[in-house]
Length: 367
Image (cartoon, rainbow, N blue to C red; front, side):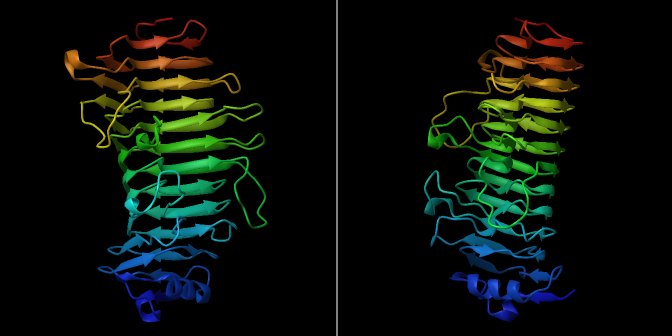
C-alpha cells in the first residue's frame, strides 16, 4: 500500500488556504487501502471533501478547521463507497461561530457505509454532530474526545430518508461500538431544546432499525443527556435491539444520565451516574438531571427485557439536590433491576410504575 503526504501534493497546511483541491486530488489517485498522511504540526482548512474509497487518514498531531464557505459536512460519503476507511488521530475544529444552529455541519458524515474505524480523534466547537452515521454497520469509535458540540457527540441513526446517492441496499444500522471516549459539554439548549446527547442510537424507518451497539468505558461530562437510545415516535417504527451501555462514567447531565426508550433486549450495567453541580456553560437551564437512568417506551414502540444492574446513581449536593429520580422504569415488561446503589434523589431513588413487569427491583418502588 502506498503512502501519500498531502504537503507533497499541493496542500498548504497553513490554516489559511482552503486545501480541498489538493486533498481531493490525492484521494482520486490513491488506491484502496493507501494511507493519506496529514503531517503533525500543520493546520488544514477544509470545506467539503467526498470520500470515494477506503483509505487510512493518518492525522496524528494535525489540525483540521472547517471553512466557513459552505454550511455542510467536512468529509462525506453518501454513496457508501468508503467502507473500510480508518481515521487515526487529528483535531477537528468545527468553527462553531461561523454557523447557525440547525445547519448540518459535522467533521464526518457517512451513509450506508461499513467497516469504519475512528481512533484518537478530537472533535471540538461544533454546531452539529461530532460523528454522524446513517444506516452504517461495523463502526468503531475508539479513544476519542468530543467537546463543545451541539446535538450529538456520536450519532447512529437509521432514518426513513437518508440521502443515499449510491446503490447499497438499506439495512439495519448494526455492530456499533464506542469505547474509551470522552464527551464534554454536549448541549443543544441554545436551540430551545432539552437535547444534546453524548452518544445516541435512534431510528425513524418502518422496516429497519439500529441494533447491536455498545458504549463501554466512556466518560460523559455536562451533556444534556449522556447516553441515549430512543425509538418509536411514529406508527410502524421499529424498536432498537440489543444495545448495551456498560461501565461508563456519567456526570452532571442536565436531563437524563442514561436512557433507553423503545429498546428490546438491552443492558445498562456497571455505570456511575452522578450530579456534582457542575454546569454546562451555555445558559439558560430549564431542567437539571431529572432522572439518573430512565427506561421507557411510547404508544408506538414498547420497551422489553432491559437489564439495569450494578449501577451507582447519586446526587451528592445534599439539600440542594434536584435529581428527581435515581432510576425510573416507566414502561415495558420483563425488566430486571438489581444490585444498584442509588442515593440523593428528591422523589424516589428507584421508581417502578405499577404497570411495569419487573423482577428483582432491589429498592423502593413508587407507582
